[in-house]
Amino acid sequence: MSSHTAVTDRILGAVQRTHGCDLDTLTKSFSDLSWSQVFLEVDRLSREGQVLVRLDTGGRYMIRLPDHIRVPEPHGSWS
Image (tube, one colour):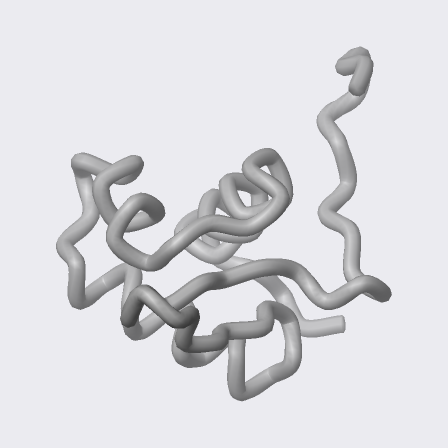
């Protein structure tokens, strides 16, 4: 498994918590990151198969985790 950066972990965590979201919503949830930073990381994750990206009928790019990938929950949290 490749090592994750803090940005990677944040993006994967956000996508997991929302059970998928659109790129614009994801970008807006990280006020300290630019749209380009989020896009480039989502693109990299998509190429590695860690997220799935598809264009929905409304023209939005939807991002979700593949069924076989789960981000570990922090210790002590309950879902």
